[in-house]
Amino acid sequence: MRIETPLRGIVEHNRPQYYDVLVVLGGNIRYENGVYRSTDWSIGPEKSRGGHWRIKAAAELVRQGKVGKIIFSTGITHSDPFAPSEAEVMYREFLGEFPDSEQLKNIPIELEIGSLSTTENANRTVGLLKGDFYKSDQVIGILTSSYHLPRARLMFAKEFETQKLDKSIALVSAEKILLEAEKSGRASSEIENIIRAVYTAKEMQGRILNERRGIRDFLNNDYHPLPPG
Image (cartoon, rainbow, N blue to C red):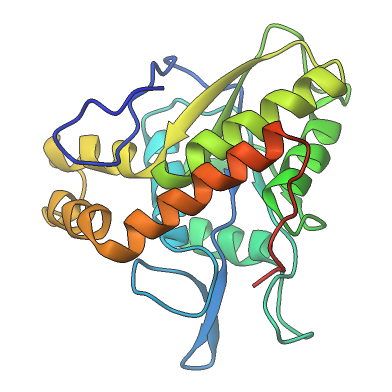
């Protein structure tokens, strides 16, 4: 992967024209005004940010006819024991992107609600991908935020190898998808400005450094996921 766009921190990747399965990773949820919602880019107590853009990016790819099936992955990470799983919140918000449900009638959607970290996302999702529905020549898209992609790539690749899953992994940046949609007039005209502000902020630079430390620790077999939330 290379950073080569004019927006610092956006990961470039070669995307296929079609994802047989799109795995959407959770980016934490918040309880606001009586409703659990996926995170926006504002700084909060959660360990991830920008979760809602992952959902909007998945919806954009579906509208383009590039997705065969979706798996929303992440369990209950909120401190409230009665909170829904992140996968359930993502699914609800994803459905909200399609007032006309006919657009989704041929797209199976599965919820993986047991994982609490990226390593568990990879382990549990790859386990699902070994089912009878899946074929060896399929392309599996892993959709998450740009800052999270390098670590997610490493952990999914490891699980693909460990579980002997012979499929192609395609990395999908939520920011990149929405930036392209903006330039095509299909998304808010503020996407580029938001990305620039988020990825040049000191907090994000610290977050990216922590992601790199996580990669280093994982490669050294000394990786310990942060507590959920």
